[in-house]
Length: 446
Image 1: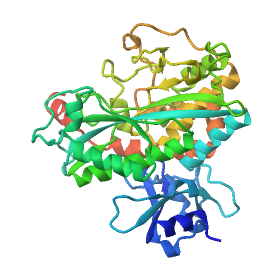
Image 2 (image 1 turned 90 degrees about the vertical axis):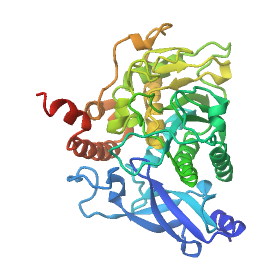
Image 3 (image 1 turned 180 degrees about the horizontal axis):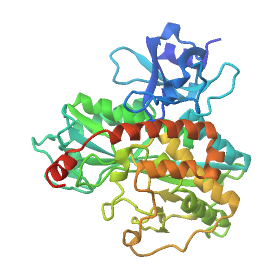
Image 4 (image 1 turned 180 degrees about the vertical axis):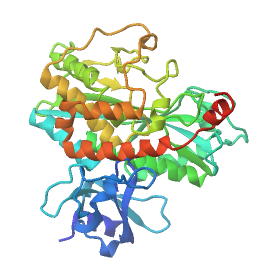
């Protein structure tokens, strides 16, 4: 009997397969092999340390807390629902996202995809199913081979780069029509369901909204979209970057997460009462986000650059206040009908691993729901005028995460240990870099 994956390979004349997993940074790791050699159920192995590789490609000096000292292999098993063609490949190629297991059949609990799956299962045990809709911002930039030079907007079809901010401009999007034609086609080929595309505040900064759905499906789509946008941009001799703050004096890039919860049996939104009013669970979910988001900050802003985005008056939130249709707040409740009632988490950066960020955001709301928390009163003015309520650096955020007993228990000690070990190693390497600002202002003045 031909398996679901085998049938897909036959139907599309697939000759090669990219067997991939998302690592801690959201980078695709794995192996490429002939389709004839591909075994979907445990045919591929990778070292357990794949989840402990830093974004620079190095490994932390001490990994004893997170993995076996024997550096064992983990077994990768394909998720048939994730198979897609690789539309930019020269040969007929498929990509399949895998889940990770140990030899005894236990899941690798530090794997980001497992983390999200586990949080969704906790909701299911309560009779709930979370629904999410990510909004992902990114910049198009001119190709730049020298990391010491600032990035610049690319030249569009007019032959000119954007001179300044063109928020919501149709003409500014049209400058890159050939690129977006490729992105849309690549997304259609991969079942990445884009809802809208708009020009955001920064020069050549774009935002795509994905159609709401199951968290694991949407995390897969964000994971694949990042790769798709980068590949399409390279075809047009530019970069697509999801850095949180690529330009010093321009707005950063976020991944806003719209989230709600439905009853598994009735499919009704549990954030609304039968009469259409906001429910107790709705306010408890917001209360959980307010209480636990600061401690979970490293999971939304996972890189040293992430914290440069969180500046007052540049479109990013600086605290966890909430309000109705208030874009200055960290938590926004959009205008909607009862069945569409949701909360928008505006804190997360575009550079976050989507599996980890979605899991963390849902985990914070879940804790609020089971603890029966109450939020503060909604604000109607500018939250930018209020004090900072979030960690200001990766180092501070990692200490807050380790110190949150509730989050460590919910997310799992194995995952939290692995994540913090990786990010602490990245932070230590960053501290060894002397910036041009330091040379400019300290070299001869102190």
